[in-house]
Image 1 (cartoon, rainbow, N blue to C red):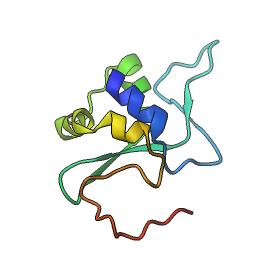
Image 2 (spheres, helix red, strand yellow):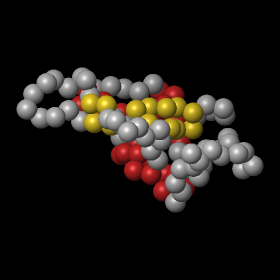
Image 3 (cartoon, helix red, strand yellow):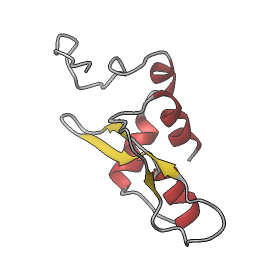
Image 4 (tube, helix red, strand yellow):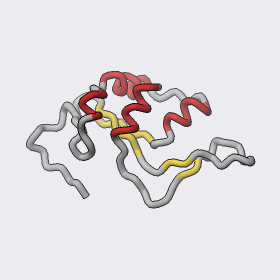
Length: 104
């Protein structure tokens, strides 16, 4: 979980203007946690896992367990390399250096 949180601090994609409130939290006095983006994690060559930014909330508050392939991919990420780069330069090991990157 700590590694996932660390990756979220340096990589956040598809940020939207609006927010999504957790619809699994019961209505009450406290507002539900909100998120408005995705986390992308490189998997096997040609595969990128996408997860809502509220994923850590879903895991800790609601007991969600991501698929093993996603967990393995998170554990395989070089967090130090990600901490030194920002999107679109976050390194995906299977994306060729000469690949065109769309910034906006």
